[in-house]
Image (cartoon, rainbow, N blue to C red; front, side, top):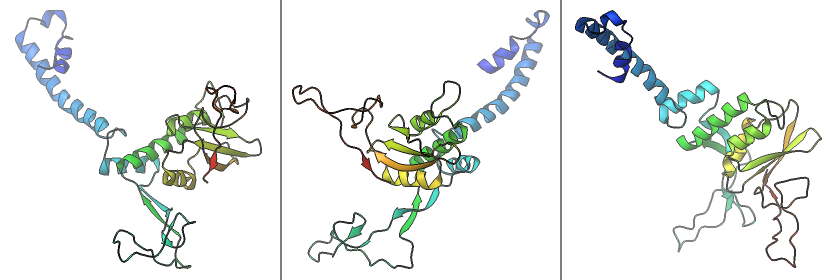
Length: 239
């Protein structure tokens, strides 16, 4: 017998403890129930967002309303010059690895779709779940606040600043995938109060980016007389 069936056998009242047929009957019935229990338990394990893959992850995405393919996010590479990061120049006939790019057609979209692999799709599903469960409060001890959601989505590598003009700025670690940032912005799954927009998305490292005393995770000016007092680095607007 298993732990499951043993638990039911142990529920027999005292006068049936020593009766082998009573024990056998309960063990047989519990064994049938265990099959159903294991089947239901397997469903939960199979659809765990942290371990699900492929089609099962697609099902989870449909439940929370998150597509695997996000339209028009990735900038197309077209012929251009070095000051444009989304361009390629002339090909080199002596170097097969130095490829050119076609001229951009003004009638075609400048961006293409972002197709998420399982790892990326898992991130966006979690982001949508966090967004759906968040409140409109910047910080709250009683509800899931905007800062809580942002910290969850970006694993502590981002924070939000309220500009007090019906706009928010998102500061995020430069190591975060820039294409995902564009997709998050486009999908509108960054939490905010009603009618409040995200104005800018800025690359910044919490604790290392330059700022003033009203921001506890910013770093001020360096001290030229103290080599250990290193100043902050300037943030960089990306969107």
